[in-house]
Length: 269
Image (cartoon, rainbow, N blue to C red):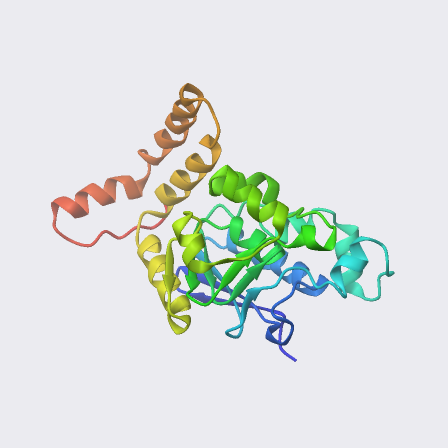
């Protein structure tokens, strides 16, 4: 049996793959731990500039928490049985890290939604910066149907990422929407045929990775930090984050390459 989360780096792009296709890539305790490790690796590896997260197979990106393993563990309906169970229970931040709820990888993350993104899978997608989905995918947070709370960030993020009334419809009905609807609502960047999801996401990742990495990280950090702030406060935050970028070697290289009509070489310094 292979790893439940696969990690691959192609030059400056990391590919994180949820690998439980037989379980629709449902999040088990081991998968959550492995995801947390993957995101820490993305953050700490200076060669990585962009990450893509996807699911194995063609049926699901992620169907959410494993209702037979993960939820009973968290509700104490079953005792811990192995090291993965114990690690999840010992670290209450594990869920926030694995689902990108409270953990900042610093670099842009692109979701390649190759199939259904439901419950925790939808919440993982909400923690990413850009999203490409299959035209057959469906998305939604169904926790309310099982009398549980979508605690991976949905009540905070969905009303910010789609119109309020749309968010509340998803949260309170537990209904799923099609990829076409999610695109119309502004939750997705692209909808493509099934076999083109990962290539489309990687093409987007490569375009971002070709830019100045310090500028990319600062722009992402500023956009996230300024969400919901009064304009004057947000402008101050932006100024504070912009100033150091102009003092980097890359900021000198970019305009010089433009003037010399050549491709810039960015070193992240």
